[in-house]
Image (cartoon, rainbow, N blue to C red; front, side, top):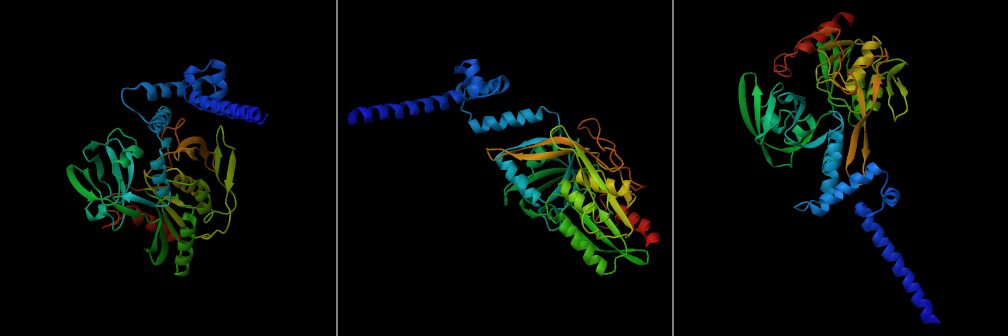
Length: 401
């Protein structure tokens, strides 16, 4: 009797194991499943075809290709086919690097760049960085990295050829006006300053100069707030907010920083197919009060930086000085994936208090923000002999102080 019970239980256990193993194998080999069964186990027909195709490559391609590499390639290809420069797939390694960059730390040579037709135009050279020690300047264009031409690559893809492990070297070919330069630079861990601040002279008065490099870290607003409070105590009678080369970051940070200048009222409205439409309003303490304010912008001012500049312009709170901004009217959402990577895809558009959207049709580059005071900044002189846009901003503020 006991033997029969034991035998029946053993058969049941083995049957369950057999079904489990078969299910796992068939789930990874959907072409052996009948259509209706595959739909249940794998999903709808389109997903089943993708799984079937990847499995065929894994099984039959002439050389071994790992499943993780196939999944990375499939996701990257799908995002690339969206023809959206702002959307991307992060592999697990790239997502870790992205999180480092959000916290303003990365391993590289110490540059902030903007993608241009010829490669990467240098917007900022960070102090005491390998790039600065190598003599690289703002305004230079990187055309090659270790012999790889950067023309035609997305900004994200091109910068990957410059970043790398600390202590390794990269050879950069640069264009400076009519000259071509070659610099061999040793990479290091770079900690990017989020805020640079100081007092600056505007006629007979002094103003707070605050340069914000990114809206990425969730503490950006805290650093801006601390700078405003400190410089007001030291006698600042106005503010120059420098958003040149600032490619944006978190919309929530844009809201909080705008709120330091604006009374109650709208800052930005976001709308999208899969996200709830909402309007973000000024909140918290208006730390800058009614201090006369100028905002510096250029072609590298984008996204969250355009939200701040645009909100202050629309509500006539600040004078915008410089050249036309980038013209990005969409925002992205980063969603982590189970493989340790993430999708960063465009999910909606944003609209300034006046109702305008700064982008073009869909994800195309748009009109951007036209400055109230135009000044053609010379990037080769910025931070050295004469910062033309800053000088003009100080001149604009002087009569208002």
